[in-house]
Length: 174
Image 1 (cartoon, rainbow, N blue to C red):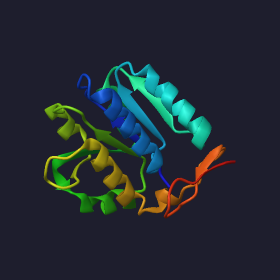
Image 2 (image 1 turned 180 degrees about the horizontal axis):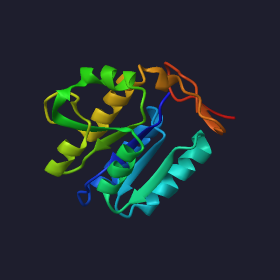
Image 3 (image 1 turned 30 degrees about the vertical axis):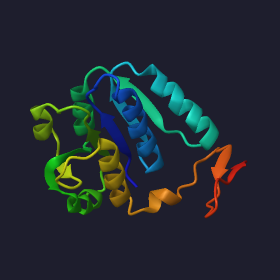
Image 4 (image 1 turned 180 degrees about the vertical axis):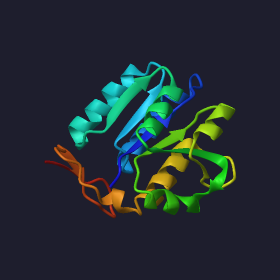
């Protein structure tokens, strides 16, 4: 399977520390390999490192000063850039993206994204055409991209694991 990464651009004070963390958590849990984030969110690197240590896996966080550089690098390496926006093509286009069998960079914004992004993206994809969260859009896109198989992924070197339970919390130490 091709590599999938997420690029998080934009930042709204107060709100986005937590939202960017949630974007990273969803990206990791729903099958992405890494996230690039614009700005100085050093604590995100530590949070994900600690998460990987407890729950397994090697999801990576990379900080960048310029989102355009990441997109340029991705395109130079013949990867696809998919921008999630409520103004784009219907989510059904995910099938076409998957069939190309290329690395995919999924771009999610915070505030209003620069108009230039629409032209740089290979695909502008809408997960519904109503206002919604970038966190939910990312989850829906990745779930469709991986056909739900990402939810059964076993994370290597996990020290903890949740056992499904109808009646409450069931976490085991490995």
